[in-house]
Image (spheres, rainbow, N blue to C red):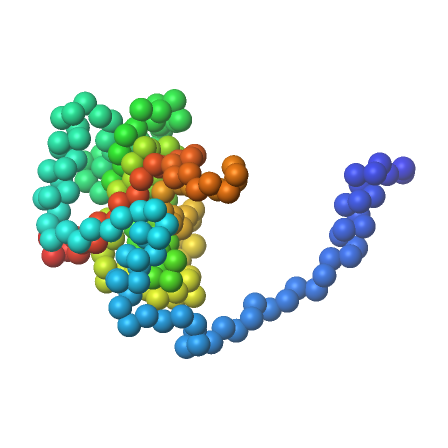
Length: 198
């Protein structure tokens, strides 16, 4: 049998696979740690173009959501009143007019201001990235110092798809000028609030 170039290349790759290597052991005790993870997290969010607010009551946030809706804007509240089954079926065309999305983050990372949001929190993968404004609610008790600690808390088998979100969308490709909101949410606000106590 005569093989084509594609088959020849694939066969050569299969015959020359490198041996599997064990993941390195990382001593987390020598990684970045912060005495005040909340303060460091807030500083990194702001450095990335976002903003952080402390909220004592969920009612303040619910009042804000109601005011935006009364203004006639399309809002999705993923930790409150949304019809989850309906959201799962929405496509980019359905979500084109989405102004603001409110959702929960599972954890935050102090060293870079990243927020871990799994599919369990977003329900529809388009929503956090197609909205004009993104508001993420995070319990400050769920902020860790670094990415090593974050990955130790993430259960990919349970969470499935998930992403780290760090600030609003941005690009500096054109003439090295930083443009916020280039290809996704134009703003990111993080509300630090213990929902259990509110």
